[in-house]
Image: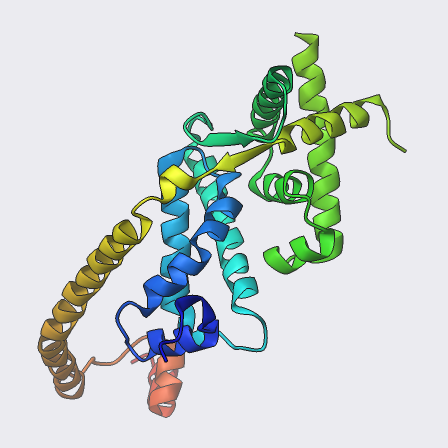
Amino acid sequence: MKVLESETTDERIIADVLAGKEGAFIQLVNRYRRKVFAMSARFARDRDDLDDICQDTFIKVFENLGKFRSDAPFEHWLSRIAIRTCYDALRKRRKEKGNVSLDTIHYQIAAESGEDLLVADEARSLLGMGMAQLNPAERLVITLLELEEKPVREIAQLTGWSETNVKVRAFRARQKLKRILEKHHER
Amino acid sequence: MKDERDELLDELFRKARLMKPETGSVEEHFETRLLAVMEEKRRDQAIWSSWTWRLVPWLAVIVIIVGIGSFTIDPGRSGDLFVTFSNGDDDYQVTSMLVGG
């Protein structure tokens, strides 16, 4: 009986990739593509940047697949790589001092009325402006904590930083954001 | 304790959370692009690797020449005291210093 793609375990697919079976890696990509895109979208500048981050993530996965130990789910390992890649992208962007624009990424609105939509879009733009002035680590932490609503423990696991470190960075990010927004309101 | 600015910030986050990134259109043909990039990377690595192998004989020749040179060329006497002691020339150096040689 033919085993359905969705029934094949990650471990089985990984073993196939390591054995050099063509197409096995794409099976893995298809399975986790949506998750990686969703995680990276909050950190990408535009569509091309998002595409690059996701490509880098999967290339790193492919290159390091041999180091994956099955003591933790593959999804956790992949998430850590994706977050690390987003962090690297934020750091690289800071060095380049490029313009921050989220305009070419489309957003799906969970708001019901047109007024809500406008308010949500304004809030996103305002926060985007504020977050662009944070350092990469602060931006990463505050995005995961406040926009993705991930618990501190999970952020610590994803980033490899201690829980205290995550809390300190989140606190500093909030303080900075408050000052930035205050200045913005004064204008 | 939370102040008014904290509440304002929380409200901004709450509103911004209503907007979820929609990535469906960027995901289209992602596998094709990914495979193309991986293939290009693999090709680049293959080129580097082949060049490295081509350079191996030349590097080996350089190592042999340097090895032969270090055995055949006499560096001569050095004025450095550390080198003198290492070479076991200390008696000669002390004598020549005392007699003004």
